[in-house]
Length: 183
Image (tube, rainbow, N blue to C red; front, side, top):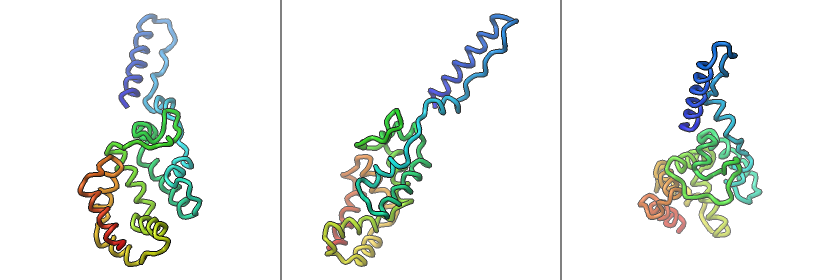
């Protein structure tokens, strides 16, 4: 926003300077509004590419549906400039191949979008069922994990994971709960 605001101030100052030079000149051009500066400098971000970033190579319909939901939810939470600043897209609006460690704002928006579209306990269960080749009591695991942690605790752990807080007590609590519930 400061860039857009400074462009607006520069355009307004230039228009005032031109108007003072000659009384016979055409009226000064309209100053550029911050909305038009944003429109000129932001790039569209592909919802399909954001969805693919989220789902990886999965071809399962559930994953694809959740990926589309996530992409739209993330775009409602972060505009182009925030996606770029967070390292999710480059300056051309292309989704990056490797995500960086997020700042707290980007991590919170990502997790909010994720949890709006994906039941974390169900996703964790699916992953463990794949790892154990079905050798897990699915109902018991899901019930155990839901009893072990609140949604707010899961959200905090996920945000800290994305922002580099791997050694935090919240991340440890999530990992411990998942491990103990899988036994």
